[in-house]
Length: 295
Image 1 (cartoon, rainbow, N blue to C red):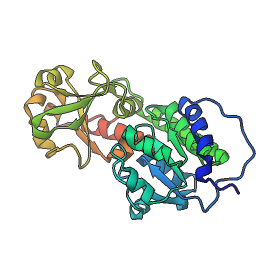
Image 2: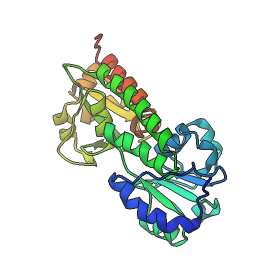
Image 3: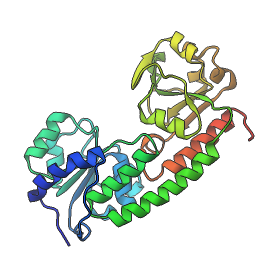
Image 4: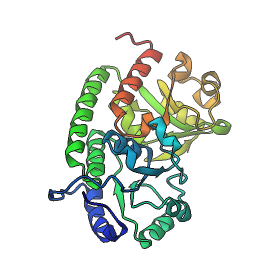
């Protein structure tokens, strides 16, 4: 079996743009990654995919967003994926780093590349195609293409069933609130994982005037007129459901009128990993429940 070493850094750097762009890489006959390879996974969904491919035992460390499966929390934590310390990463002596596309900061990535550690960037995913491409990219990095193809097909089938179940003639207007700290509503526009999961769940993003995340005025929230407020559990400085919906920004909105608020685990909801079909099912069911939709 082939062992990935730091000497393969040049090959990894050449392969990286192809993977990031989703380009086809000619199939090569090779054994799966050596079972002694030390892998650092940066990004919760990447960590989940590594486990789903049967390579979880190769992980020697993870970042703070990697919390599933529960066993990964026993691994050393190199910090938040967007605020990595080169020293912390180097201290776990990885042979290979698998990182989500927004890992950083750039200066830290430069130091790690200069150290000669092979690093593969896994593309972001915000829809069905992106999710399956992410699985295949991790499989390619680990020489587990066949396993990745099987996992991709399984996820695709489960997701298609969830999408069919989520179809509705009256899609809810959903506002994803990243933070409501001090009564200020920071919400998702387009081009985010939140926007993507809302669409997969058969709903409509209540805010489409901008991309990314922005703090909204009370008037902008009222104009968005969300039917449902969606938030992550345990993050964003949120109070109780009642306290959130009583904020001035939500006064007069359908969500406040109906008490329609949904909270979900952040990694499950936004990770776009192997559990995304479950996330779609749970979100679409929760939206229907808080709207009083029996269908």
